[in-house]
Image (cartoon, rainbow, N blue to C red; front, side, top):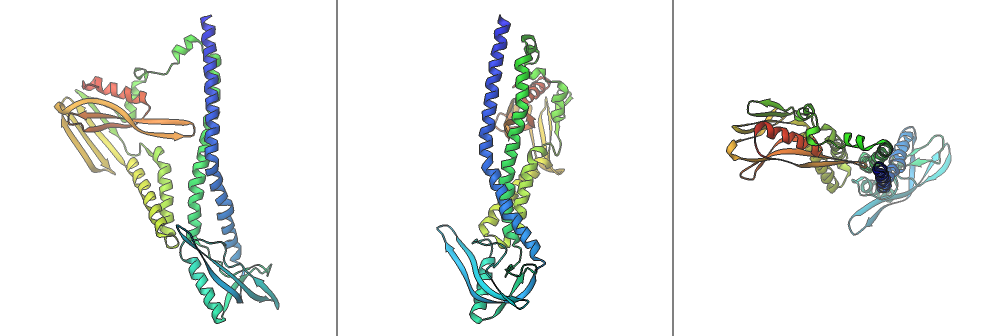
Length: 380
């Protein structure tokens, strides 16, 4: 009877867990959809049509055109001013008259760079002076023409920021939620249907002492020395957590550098600053190493960046108060959340020296902490 009641409780718990996971999936999916739709919409409606038109216009033929109207349109808002150009013109192809109104590849108003202002002023001046301008005509369909067929790289890169950031975040969250739901359901059914009380005791979550010593030592290259330990964290240990931020930061920096002449100064500073900070932070995370010796004489640490000494600390044993573990950072991937810990030495002055970082989960941190305390004799 006790066994039957235990199995029923496990089944109810598994069903509740499955329901929560399903709810979490839909909540995350609904949150991600606007981001994914915004990025995809900008790609399909903004970026790709621009590239397609620019590509096909490279084969169009130049013809002289007479402007019948031309104006620079200024729209002033509470926070910004945007510009647009409108014009109408006449031209001849094979002795036949045509009239066109398309000015550039993209229509509408914007304030990215000086393209609109320069084009509008040039066309207004030509119209006042009665000068002809050059139009580009589709030889297959002469009624299809444009006055300026240049590709605005700054505007294109500006749109790509939304495609990459919004689309990347949205589809990344959708993929993470799908993977989390797909992988969680089989695990819930397996535990609810097949686990017995004996198996439950055998498959419980491992305590710190249950984690293999080899895994603890491999986490930070822990070596035992007389009266203490030596730890070494090599370069590149955090690349998986920082790669995405470095990639996004690199895109931001590239947009600011390549499209800076076509973008408002505010956006150049914002994108360049955020991108530079992300790249610098990611570079530091993957390019630094940490060496530690902790024994009866005290503690000695060295933090190097690309092999060059960045900072070092040394304290005698009398200054060491205790060892402790604490949360370093958390990474959210879909419905899965990974928390990374670090192990520190706390000094009598209140200063804390990191001796191990990037430890996945509290169990690994506590296991390493216990191993160091047992080998060195310092309190926890």
